[in-house]
Image 1 (cartoon, rainbow, N blue to C red):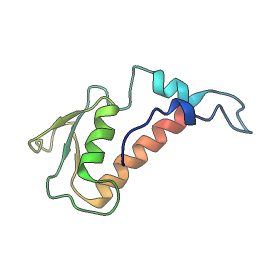
Image 2 (cartoon, rainbow, N blue to C red):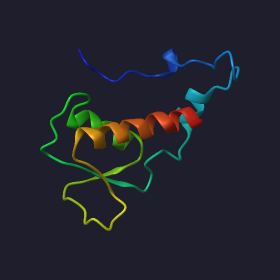
Image 3 (spheres, rainbow, N blue to C red):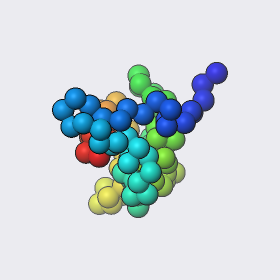
Length: 101
Protein backbone atom coordinates (compact mmCIF):
# COMPACT_ATOMS: atom_id res chain seq x y z
CA UNK A 1 0.00 0.00 0.00
CA UNK A 2 1.35 3.45 -0.92
CA UNK A 3 1.07 5.93 1.92
CA UNK A 4 3.00 8.83 3.41
CA UNK A 5 4.94 7.89 6.53
CA UNK A 6 6.53 10.04 9.19
CA UNK A 7 10.05 11.05 8.16
CA UNK A 8 11.24 11.42 11.72
CA UNK A 9 12.18 7.75 12.09
CA UNK A 10 14.23 7.86 8.86
CA UNK A 11 15.97 11.22 9.17
CA UNK A 12 19.74 11.38 9.01
CA UNK A 13 21.38 13.50 11.67
CA UNK A 14 24.19 14.80 9.49
CA UNK A 15 27.11 13.66 7.38
CA UNK A 16 30.87 13.17 7.57
CA UNK A 17 31.59 16.63 6.15
CA UNK A 18 29.22 18.91 8.08
CA UNK A 19 28.63 16.73 11.12
CA UNK A 20 25.33 16.42 12.97
CA UNK A 21 23.54 19.46 11.54
CA UNK A 22 20.05 18.00 11.97
CA UNK A 23 19.18 19.62 8.61
CA UNK A 24 16.31 17.24 7.71
CA UNK A 25 14.62 17.82 11.06
CA UNK A 26 15.13 21.60 10.78
CA UNK A 27 13.57 21.55 7.33
CA UNK A 28 10.61 19.47 8.48
CA UNK A 29 9.93 21.76 11.41
CA UNK A 30 10.55 25.04 9.54
CA UNK A 31 7.27 26.92 8.98
CA UNK A 32 8.82 28.91 6.09
CA UNK A 33 8.48 26.35 3.36
CA UNK A 34 9.86 26.40 -0.17
CA UNK A 35 6.64 27.41 -1.93
CA UNK A 36 4.97 29.57 0.74
CA UNK A 37 2.90 32.29 -1.00
CA UNK A 38 3.54 30.71 -4.41
CA UNK A 39 0.93 29.59 -6.93
CA UNK A 40 1.57 26.52 -9.03
CA UNK A 41 -0.34 25.45 -12.12
CA UNK A 42 0.05 21.85 -13.27
CA UNK A 43 -1.14 21.25 -16.81
CA UNK A 44 -3.89 18.58 -16.81
CA UNK A 45 -2.37 17.03 -19.95
CA UNK A 46 0.98 16.41 -18.23
CA UNK A 47 1.74 12.73 -18.64
CA UNK A 48 5.43 12.07 -18.42
CA UNK A 49 7.67 9.67 -16.54
CA UNK A 50 8.34 10.39 -12.90
CA UNK A 51 5.92 11.56 -10.24
CA UNK A 52 2.25 11.61 -11.17
CA UNK A 53 0.23 14.82 -11.30
CA UNK A 54 -1.29 13.97 -7.91
CA UNK A 55 2.16 13.38 -6.39
CA UNK A 56 3.35 16.74 -7.74
CA UNK A 57 0.28 18.40 -6.21
CA UNK A 58 0.99 16.78 -2.85
CA UNK A 59 4.66 17.82 -2.95
CA UNK A 60 3.76 21.39 -3.86
CA UNK A 61 1.08 21.63 -1.17
CA UNK A 62 3.40 20.16 1.46
CA UNK A 63 5.83 22.88 0.42
CA UNK A 64 3.22 25.57 1.09
CA UNK A 65 2.03 26.20 -2.48
CA UNK A 66 -1.44 27.06 -3.65
CA UNK A 67 -2.46 24.92 -6.64
CA UNK A 68 -4.32 26.98 -9.23
CA UNK A 69 -6.76 25.36 -11.64
CA UNK A 70 -6.49 27.86 -14.50
CA UNK A 71 -3.34 28.58 -16.46
CA UNK A 72 -1.83 31.85 -15.26
CA UNK A 73 -1.06 34.71 -17.61
CA UNK A 74 2.56 34.81 -18.72
CA UNK A 75 3.38 37.91 -16.67
CA UNK A 76 2.57 36.28 -13.33
CA UNK A 77 5.02 34.69 -10.92
CA UNK A 78 3.14 31.40 -10.81
CA UNK A 79 5.13 28.27 -11.56
CA UNK A 80 3.69 26.32 -14.49
CA UNK A 81 4.38 22.60 -14.81
CA UNK A 82 3.49 21.71 -18.37
CA UNK A 83 6.33 19.55 -19.69
CA UNK A 84 8.78 16.94 -18.42
CA UNK A 85 11.44 19.68 -18.30
CA UNK A 86 9.14 21.81 -16.09
CA UNK A 87 8.61 18.83 -13.80
CA UNK A 88 12.37 18.27 -13.57
CA UNK A 89 12.96 21.95 -12.70
CA UNK A 90 10.28 21.72 -9.99
CA UNK A 91 11.85 18.59 -8.48
CA UNK A 92 15.35 20.10 -8.76
CA UNK A 93 14.14 23.19 -6.90
CA UNK A 94 12.89 20.97 -4.07
CA UNK A 95 16.24 19.15 -3.97
CA UNK A 96 18.20 22.41 -3.95
CA UNK A 97 16.05 23.76 -1.11
CA UNK A 98 16.60 20.62 0.97
CA UNK A 99 20.37 20.89 0.46
CA UNK A 100 20.42 24.51 1.67
CA UNK A 101 19.05 23.61 5.12
